[in-house]
Image 1 (cartoon, one colour):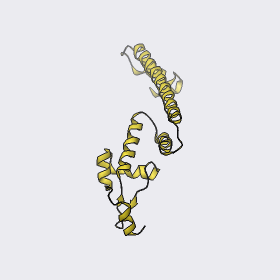
Image 2 (cartoon, one colour; image 1 turned 90 degrees about the vertical axis):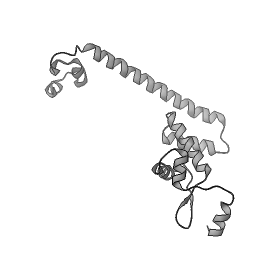
Image 3 (cartoon, one colour; image 1 turned 30 degrees about the horizontal axis):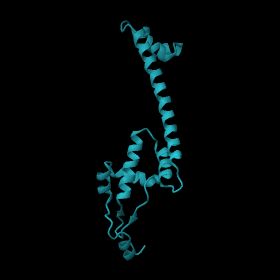
Length: 153
């Protein structure tokens, strides 16, 4: 795009450099570059000097990504959400479906964590905390009480 056309395209629009975007979105510059590389934010135009031209849209999209990550969405899942968000034919039920899938994933992880918690508590309760490591029931359980495992102690 020619310089004059670029100037017209951004006439009346506030633009930002990468450092300003990072500050406003509360991420670092490398995160902005990574999101750009992954296609999570639109590739910004460049000035003749090579500097990227970012707009408020970029900042808003980065904030969207960060909020989705806080809810446990992976970057691949966020890419799907962004495609739904930007798709003109997307319905609310499609977005709800994605959220429901993530919810089920979280429920499964919670069940796994509860199982791990219970197992760890059982192991802790089984150990008197005295004697040699060779008699430690925690190490025995982790090693599967095999001959090779016993040699590690």
